[in-house]
Length: 73
Image (tube, rainbow, N blue to C red; front, side, top):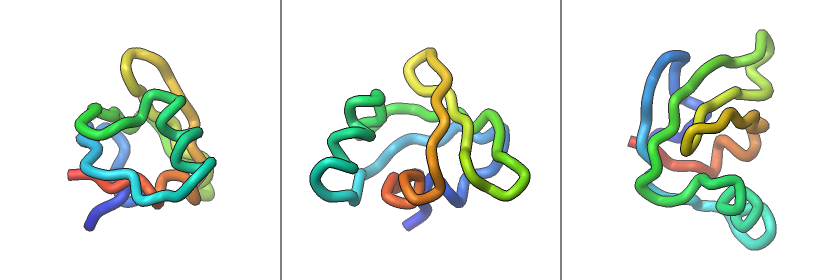
């Protein structure tokens, strides 16, 4: 399954599943990233960490470790 970390700049993707556990999964859900939400990939830092995305009309930066648990299509 493809994760948010694999997405390219300028791509719009849809969340299929959050595969994390406990507090990490809860924190990502609290940021507005839930199943079936669309995410636009705005920028990726030169070394790949963090990833800047647009979710539900606001901008958000995610660490690579967090992006790996967000499965997309």
